[in-house]
View 1 (tube, rainbow, N blue to C red):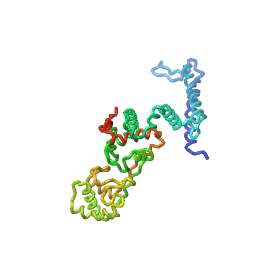
View 2: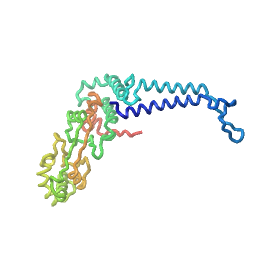
View 3: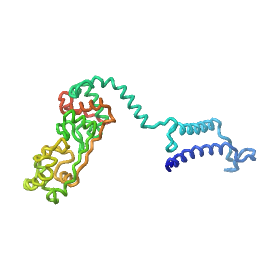
Length: 309
């Protein structure tokens, strides 16, 4: 069965061309053949007549050419609903072909770095420049052009890593992506007061301003409910991406209100996988660049900020 919308689009496209043909036919013939001066009979200001002269030949030729071009285009390319056209062209195929061509052109550039370890690549000035451009094109939209992130987007220039900061961990993150889930735990913890007490205890772990009495009350709930992911001491677990609560780095906002909101509502955060979008060589180059931001002091202690033009 042919889908309705395919027929609808096809009819609209062909009807437009047919309307152009009808217009051309209608304007190419005299409407009042009995009139000697070929006027339409409309007269204004006593002597201003509306004439029914034929269209200029050059205009007719261009009109016909446009109609033929439209029909040829619909025959060769998609434009009639689900009909693919004889060339079977798609924007996706053209995009992939251009990307593959670009990757083939760049292979010799990456060949030397593919033979080096990621740590060695991170120390290479040329590789650093290439990695920086890859980062700006693919990663800066979330992590910022200076890689220092923002709320809900990690800072890549420090040493705090939810999933580990080794080259293997970073390459895995870039390739496969990550999905961080903090489930809503308000019901499991108990009342609103219990949640507020746990928030005060979480603040105490990082020596942030807090209420000591309420923090002591929240410790028991934290130990029985939250420690399963964050650990008894709140140090987190890189294997599951749970946050270290003992430092002063807050990915989704700090303060008691932000922590209470996180406990009550939870949070799902996703780092999209770049495998398939980028080649393995480009992912290694990005891995080296990101790792180097916090490990190679002579190249990346102060990442450059590239302002949008």
